[in-house]
Image (cartoon, helix red, strand yellow):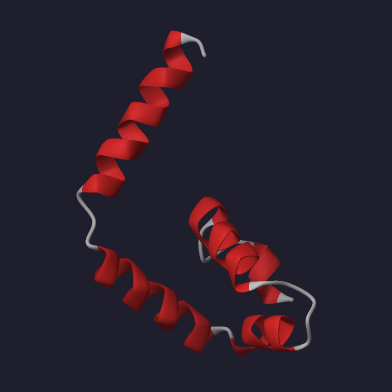
Length: 68
């Protein structure tokens, strides 16, 4: 891993170490309540909760993937 990538990962680790896991869970539950079609994707077997969570973290709630 080059120094630039290591610096990025260090900053990400630092950021997440300051966030309360209960706060993250609350925000994710709020997200799911705002986007009921996301829940349907899981219930229909099209996606897993893990996939939804990873997209939410990496892409952000405003990404067009959640408009489907």
